[in-house]
Length: 228
Ligand SMILES: O=C(CO)[C@@H](O)[C@H](O)COP(=O)(O)O
Ligand SMILES: [Fe+2]
Image 1 (tube, rainbow, N blue to C red):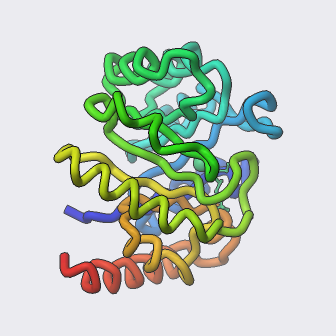
Image 2 (cartoon, rainbow, N blue to C red):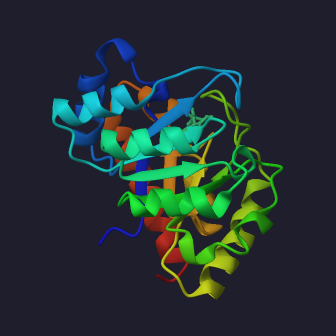
């Protein structure tokens, strides 16, 4: 099994040709489709909802769809994305009054559940819900837009999150989102991440396969330096 997952964010895809873009990036070797949902309330931008997720499933996409909810509140959209064919659903803990209940709702719907931490959000939100987490997503930019620069302090936060995951003994994915590129993916992996969202770094290149191959080569170097 590939220990590392590459998840292109379709926020940077050409929305006028979304089905084709997703097909192309999966054919180029992507593992997962990262699906950014913004409500112009929790974040100052507005994107796509469950109808688009369902349309991708009807189009024939069978790869995991990783839904990143940047919305408040979260529960209604969790239900809709479960019905629309989501595989993973993550939300920001400060966007719901009932973190445990929202995580349980995702799991009861048969999806993997996760919390998302903004650069300034404390990891303590995970303390009492480790048993309900399948994944943890650390934002390495402030949420709302693609194409921003990776915030370097995320590396220490990743190391801290990795320690907590290892101490829990649970199989929890550690995803990172924002400013991930071929030039920094290796050090991000060495800090403990195992799932990498990359939007502009993939969709703004002419050759998706060449970019993803280069990312995998960097991840292979990280794997060796970690002694895995
Ligand atoms: O959730 C978000 C932004 O809020 C991300 O998923 C971005 O879409 C990542 O874009 P790049 O930083 O990789 O361009
Ligand atoms: Fe995202």
